Structures are given as structure tokens and as C-alpha cells.
Image (cartoon, rainbow, N blue to C red; front, side, top):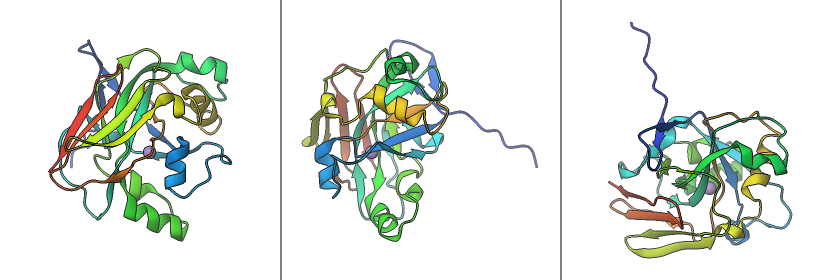
Length: 223
Ligand code: MN
């Protein structure tokens, strides 16, 4: 048997033919107070917590996705995604912006039924969060994230999620600083920064449109 050929996933960069190579995908949990409350948590008392998805969970540019298996409660979570062009560990908040190459709109697709089972049993979230094609992402815009832009998601034209990036409990710089105390960050890392309230169920055939003011939009359809 030949050695397997493994390719690095990449995402588009606005206004460029270059593509951004993805090394790792980190995600922040419950970073908007109203979403933390809708998940039954107290947003006032917790430091940021993290989970991850495999790099090849990205779906660059959206398109048509097969409906994921093993779930009866697939949820959408629209999020600002940071793309790192530099790395480091124990990065200070004041220094964190220097790591950011650009940002994009992403959707943290979640098998909520599997997540609820995992939470109840004290088991890992991987199969709830890190499944195939669980990270649709739009084109990257170079530069720092907009500070107070609107973030929203609609399904079949109906608004589901709407918020402001300024509603994040932990800012992009604080997220990078905190995450870099656990792991060494590196160029190619993506960080999903959490979702505003209004998460909900997706069904086969749904058309999803996700947007953040000032960034290239993302749309995809579930087959
Ligand atoms: Mn999320």
C-alpha cells in the first residue's frame, strides 16, 4: 500500500488568490451572556473555556453540505472566527492583536442532542462538536476584527440569531491571551469566539445565511 496523501485544509482570503492554511480549530464556549443563559449557565462566574474541532472540519465558502449523521437536533451557532498569522504562548492581552492575520464569519455546527448526553454523562464533546463538515467558514478578511459589528444568522430568510460583537464577554485579545496559557498558538490556527443567543435547530433542506458587518458573508444549504 502507498503512503496516504494528506492535504492541509485551506480557506479563501478576500481579494487574493492566496489561501489560508488551517492548522488547528479552537472554539470558545458561552462567550455571550444571553447564550450562556439559554444553555442554563451563569455567565457572570466563568472564565473562558475551550474545545476544538479537527482542521478538516472546515467547509470553505459554504455550499451544499450533506446533513450530518447521528443527530436529531443539529444546531447553528454563528461566530466571529479569528485566523492567526503568528503564534505564541502566554501572550499578553495587549500583545494579542499582533497574532491576528484576519477574521471571518463561521458557523459552529453542533449536534446538540449528543452534546446534552455528553454533558449529562460527564463525557467529552468531540462527537457533538468535531464531526465532519462541522465548521463552515466564509472568506477571510485581512486585519483586526470589527469591534462592535452586528452578527446575525437567518434560516430560510427568517432571522434566528442577532447580536453585536461588543456583547462578547471575553474580547478577541482576551481569548487569545487565555487560550495561549493552555496551548502554544501557531500560524494557521482558527479560533471560533462564541455565539450570540438564538441558537436553534436545522433541518434537511434549510438555507443558512450568516453575516458579520464588514466581513464576507457565508451561506450554505443542508442537503
Ligand atoms: Mn460555539
